[in-house]
Image (tube, rainbow, N blue to C red; front, side, top):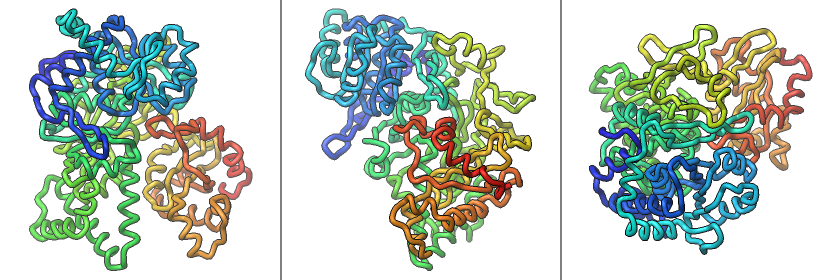
Length: 599
């Protein structure tokens, strides 16, 4: 692994792994391959093209696009030119994009298509430093606008004029140079630009490489936004190992694309696994009484067999036979939904429900949960195939130090993966990095065997008026395992007791209400019906029998629709913005606490 920069990582990879399918993208209803040779050629030409456009070392180039080959080619071309890339989520509103472009001083911008081009053209008048727009899709060149292919053609011309330019530019990049300025999606206030150096990201690639059993024979499906450091670092790791990366058409098409691509590994946030779990449980519950009995027998066998493996014990001959039968009768159908070749999933970005992780492990699908932040490039800890403990985020990765603050249990991190700082925000950088230790804002502990356990975000902890602390995320994850619940938000800060906002799974709730003889015209009738509300309270009680009295959910309010990115209630990585939800549903929340019935 003789590389110190992302440029060297790329050149090392394309020099060592020559294959027909380095990248794959769906066009005209089938996946088409881009060879290593073509991948390398395009990255180099894009670098030449940027140089021809006047991009200098340390200039900022913004990238607003869905996952596609041009994202990877553009990103690597930017870095090999010695510039800094500024990834922007395609879901952001024009004003949010304008803030990032202005704050980052971006001079050039890559956008995926005409829709995003029009969005940028609405705001470009307020961005005098932004000189050039590059569109991934074919587009008619105009004033300050050109297509991705135009840039490659420009690069070809520049290469003939100065064939040594790529080598000179890429070799002039140092490990201590900033590679990316990543604006945290943030659940409060304006986003901050996290400065990640080449050395930050490369150290994380190397640390995770030593833990993950990845080979050039692997195929990965990429669908988490590459704007997010989690997917991006994983993709650099995959490139460094010669893995074929297939891009999903969209988040909605992931189930279809999984079957088409048949990946051997992929990374995701917990929402995908929650949806997969819900689909599998739906399939099981809709079967005959005999099929249900077989399904739950199989899960029981799978859990017993899995526990033996986790304990590093050999299952008995009888248990092994039962496990093989369970696979034949039940589990092979679950595997087929992933394409049939999956070796493991990686989960990050938010806490994964232990129940869901254990369920899939019982079915023979391993989800390796890790933990990290944008500011730590991102991985701090991760479970591995050889060393996994559910309910934890794994052991600390090589080269990274973690300690737990004695005063409040906050997780502190030190290591080569910790960011240089926040762009133009020295005071805020000093607030989070003290004596070399980065304050994560998460509460947790390290168990006796060295596995890191996350309790919750420090700012999300609920302190009741009685002075008791409640961690909402573990409770919310438990609630989301029920088929009647899509989303849950636990409330109770500075209040006498805890309540919850629940988004029902209306596909399940409507037939349940009909079976109970509850009349309704629409969702509005359902969420206001007291019998239904009482049923949700009883479901929550059943799901959370072991909660302390002060943690118990005393009341619920049902919502007619789920939270969305577009309405500002979710971050681009699907985390709930609690402050936005608190404001938006203030009247509803206040009504829950208006009397003392839950006291």
